[in-house]
Length: 272
Image (tube, rainbow, N blue to C red; front, side):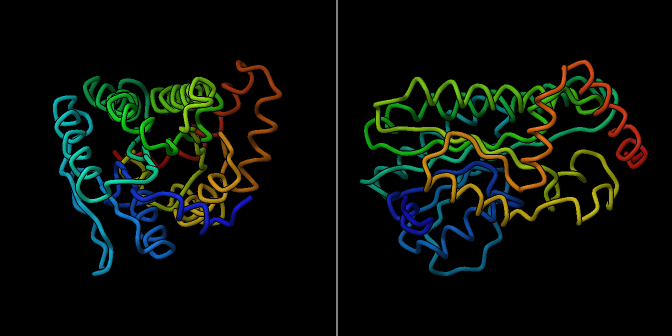
């Protein structure tokens, strides 16, 4: 098994969604330090605020909830791959996503559908549109799921179901791609110290730092999984143990238990 640094050097280009903050930004920062020759292309609404003059980064402003903007973004990604990184394997990271805490449908059904668009449709659209060039050059498709994808999640129902979709979709796609030079990796973090919970409508402090990971932890887990050729990784030992236990129980029981926990520890911190 190659070292994580050696595994990263097999790629010439990284295409990432949602690299302006959180885990996505950490992917760009850490991968850029480990492999300065890598070229990056980020698709998100905002440009990443990264102070590194040596970083080879092209930003494509794109609202991933809009299929037309995703298509335009893909066109610019193809131009980037042709002109900025004309040869070598590609690392596609489907990172962008967000959640909403509360009772369905929350503030609006439209916001729930936007979440499905970003967390599911944009992932499938980006991957499908770039699949021909991925097969031509080889590479790895990394998709960010969540431990929420392993069980129904009351008060987070749409988000959990969306993450369950990309979890099973990525694993199924990996089997389909055997022998093509392209593989997939689905990454399942637990609570992570990013802006996710504030975006989801929770007050600051809803998740104590002692129970979460940093975005750098998730990136390092991902890189080790790429190096070892895994198709799935649950980030963090506590999460690995929790998911091993959760999958042993019937889903109705797990739904009841997770609903009790989320109601007790999270719903009280939902912003008014």
